[in-house]
Length: 84
Image (tube, rainbow, N blue to C red):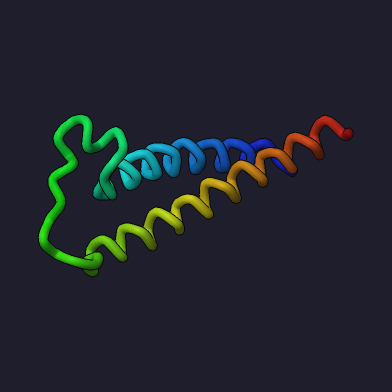
């Protein structure tokens, strides 16, 4: 495979890594963990998750799948280049 394939995967990996960190930090804490230690333990009166929270979950899973595919793609590319 050409070298531009690896560079494309690396750029995509960096972008999805930052997006994954931001999306995970946007999630609301469920309580009892580190978030409650820093004042995030106040629970809202709304039972159940909103549409925005469900969409945030979907986006997080989608970006995680793309991130995982980049990792696997880079591993396969490296294996082909080394010839192991």
